[in-house]
Length: 228
Ligand code: AP5
Image (tube, rainbow, N blue to C red; front, side, top):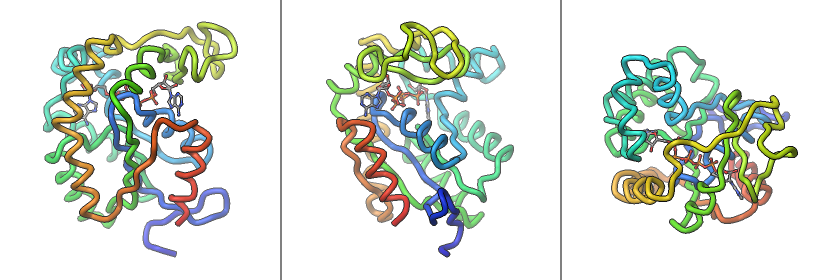
């Protein structure tokens, strides 16, 4: 078995995975499915940062304005948060990162961190998506205020309007999901994050997924890719 690979559903599978793509391209939805179906350890820097804001911690007070405006949080704050999160988990059993790295500085710092531990990234999944598609996805997105499960008013509706299927919690729209902020997040993505596509292509571990497809098609393709 290749170093660091784990078993999922009785088959060998890549377990050190990065989900890369514009806001609203479906990274969080894919991560939730990979967690449920194959037991991946999932972390999302967006979720971690929102938790800090909700707790009103020292970090939360520093990052709140960046999130509200749709701008990236400074690299040093994000890197410290990721390092402390991974220190509390078991990265040697794999990791699934949604929304990190997001800049070339973050990518190279994570390569150094993971390389020195023998935990280099095995697969980067790039969710390719247009601005108009992400806009329609995000403006209809609703998340459970209790467990964070994500829905879409039209594409992925809950069984009962306004209620989470998983825990019965209320559904709400994220503060940074207005059209104006989403358009800004997309521009920030093009400037700061899209260069990572070429970066990981050079490392020969990038696979492109057409994010406009149905979730079922996307998951089928990802499962094949992770088992190769
Ligand atoms: P973050 O929370 O990471 O937001 P994002 O990357 O902008 O991505 P989203 O969570 O908006 O979308 P997603 O791709 O997960 O899509 P989803 O699955 O929900 O970051 C927020 C902020 O935190 C950033 O703006 C920045 O300020 C800061 N930040 C975070 N990480 C950072 C970092 N590393 N460095 C610096 N700053 C950082 O899907 C969207 C909708 O579409 C949902 O309603 C879903 O139900 C629906 N949907 C999904 N897939 C499908 C499908 N195939 N068909 C139909 N509908 C679908």
